[in-house]
Length: 446
Image (cartoon, rainbow, N blue to C red; front, side, top):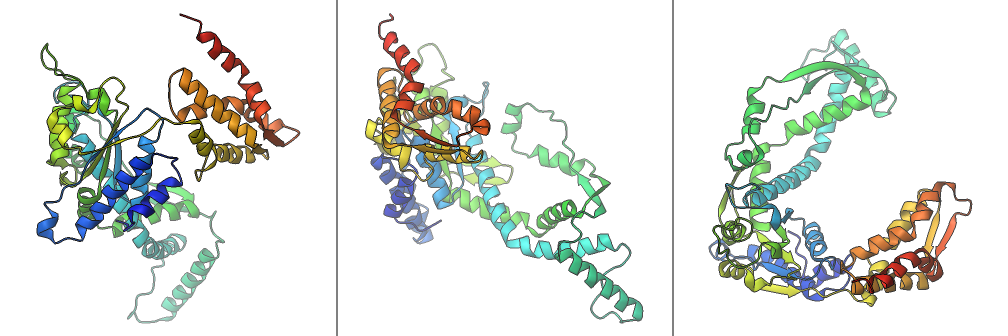
């Protein structure tokens, strides 16, 4: 885990997300506390649990983006799930345990990528020998200690010449014959729900039982190198080490972002079991409190996984959650609605702002797209006004408006004679005049 201070974490988040200082501060402290916990003695460390967070705010204000950027920043396994896709075990839908399985999968992928970088150079060296064997079939490499006859010396010289050509890139298009193993995908005989609830990894079991098929294929040396590097990397990576590291990483640094938590809020049902709300909360409770989940890589404990929940809470409120679940989310932060000034900053300040994205996309066609100050102000004014008078969808409104503004330029981009295009206030208002007129009319329609 990167030992970033809370201030450094907030500064990094500021590069991508405008405003919402309270939420940034809360997640920065939560991440720093995890680092602090790992510095403590083991007997004390096991008793310190993470302080889970609920983010409350309308859609499009940055809740998901904060969690996603945070996970990238600290290099932690991260998974985003929707609370609405879970239902009680036994009813249609995924079981809540699957979020931990997905998190463990993310952890394994992260560790595997790290191990891949570590073994890539040795793998390339081994592949070079195998490629020489393919180019000079029947000519095995000279072994140290082997008696150097005239034949072995000639063989050694031939191999060195071939290796020099390989390193010079002279043989990339030369066809070679390679035995490639075909991965067979067994027929899935269980439904998705049944497969998720099985502790045994049937997929791997079938892969071990099914006979491995391979075939000789004629491919270019360049393609053969890619295939052989993958094979050598798989051979050099110790799968058990990957699983052990991934389990430790997931249990101590994993982050689960539960979106749409407000959709499973509500009073207890008066007409029997409520599988859509209370049921999900009951199943979610032990996961957040800390329990052991069986995954295809072995048991994973969720005691020290950080859970960040989010929801708009328009209709319901956090106090509608089960008291036990409320207690597992002690930190609550409110994200504010975006104002006109926020839209202005979103269009210009983030590292990869929307205006920069559109400019770079059109630059691939040779079009130089630029936005004037009054053009950006017009975009911000319209986004703020439409959000205020209709449905408030936060910063996502800018995507809708900008797409409409640059629609003709995007369409005609390859054929434009004048490649320099300036988007100013007049151009924006002209492109969006019809939308604004419809918005005015809608006020008078009952």
